[in-house]
Length: 507
Ligand code: SF4
Ligand code: SF4
Image (cartoon, rainbow, N blue to C red; front, side, top):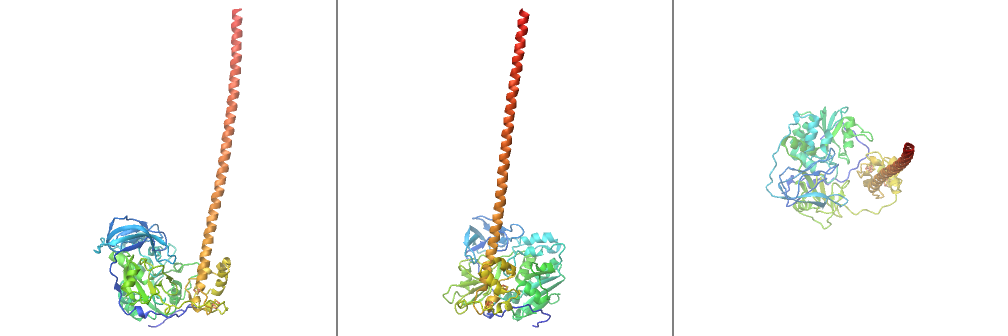
């Protein structure tokens, strides 16, 4: 594997990889569990709209919740069975909160719906996006952004380069590595389809130099195509899309811009394979490959149906080999502690690490910042982490914004190198959430003020209208009275004239 024509980005770190422990065994399929719990929101965007009710029988691949609008993704039954309930269940989220889920009791017949491959070569862009909206496919690298959106290109945008992200730079995670070793053909098929659909002139796969077997498998599968496979150095966070684009092409995606503004679209390897399976085989997104590693007895990779209880995955991996019962979802740099092992596997779950004090020692005492600037040297986004820390800590949120807090990708490189053991990313997360909630509160206050002003204006207008109506009515009554008086005066006068005339006739 040779590093050729690669551009090195600023910063980055080399944490212990800890990847080999989970690549000794091939990917295995986890059996159908006794219960499937499917959260209705497993993606970025609106929660999917329910299409089933308790008691319904569903088939494998049947849509049970439909994407609600464009920024949303559908959910499909991963196996056949009966819908037991729709209820709030704990989901794999740092908050530990519950969300709406559909619980299915599998019938173990695993009966598919009629699979209908999509004639994608005959579809125009709008038809293709509508078709992919039904697929349930989201970015499987962890971002879970609905994939159909990535094919939505403005007329004045053209995609020059399709980048396939095969970097998988976080320690411990090996699901993409094993997927590439075993299913390189699916990845290449999906890549070619995506390149055709995006009308991308070229396609580059970027893979870290610690994945020799995966590289060889991809190279073999890509033979005879124009796909380039470029090897990038093992350096965290090379798997961040903007960092990978820089490594491969030397192009910096400007602040507040997206890669498509430079004519580049990026997909993860497992995502393009899912595109292939949906379009060519008619199979929606119902499972994924997950790494289960750390101190479980048999670290390895599994293909797991969405909705499978995590506890079953852990127990199939030999169970816990220590008593800490602490599990991390994602990698040690960007992942989070799971609230419980009684949560379902979701589309975002690429890795679960059983933690132990040996593997992840307790944080050392936090010391004052010594202004050593190591954090700035390690920051791949060229931020000033020590300044961001200071502003976040002292709640100088406007200042933090001025120092580009929202460009921080929360990669954790600064925290990793800090000699004072300051949990820097936690401060940035806090500051970001404070700013977001203050902005929301301000927005809500502005809306409430506007509503109140509107209400007061309406009350004032109605009061005025009522007064005018009363005045009108009073004027009408006065006029009526005057008319009546006038009429009776005339009538009296006429009566008098009549009497006078009658008296004159008599005389
Ligand atoms: S690495 Fe830590 S101690 Fe050094 S400047 Fe950054 S925050 Fe301060
Ligand atoms: S967490 Fe943010 S500030 Fe720290 S190194 Fe990563 S991008 Fe830079």
